[in-house]
Image 1 (tube, rainbow, N blue to C red):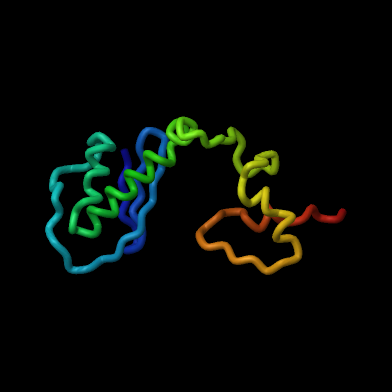
Image 2 (cartoon, rainbow, N blue to C red):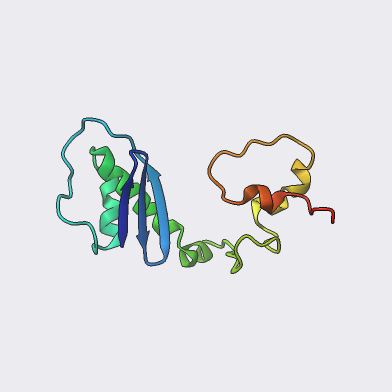
Length: 127
C-alpha cells in the first residue's frame, strides 16, 4: 500500500491495484486517531480513518475507500463494464466517447482532470 499526502491538496492511496485520491486542506486540527504506521495495514482499517476529526487522516480514509471502489474487480462485481483498453475509441461505453456527437461544435466544460481529453474527443484530422 502506498499513501501520499501531496502539496496541501491531495491524498493518494494505492492498494491491491486500486488507486484512490481525496482532497484535503491543512488546518489546525485535532490529533490523529491512528498514530502508528499506516503502510501495510489492511485497506479496511485505513478506510476507517475517514471518521477522524483530523482532516489529513480523514482524507487518507477517504482515498482508501476510493481505492477500493476504483479497483477493476470491485467495479465488475457492481455490474460496471471495465474496458481492457485504455484511451482507445473502441470503449463505446466511455462517457466521453458516447458524448462526442452531443458536444460536437459546442462549448463544453469538464470539471476534473482528464489527461488526453482533447485528443480523445477531437475530430479526426483531415490529411
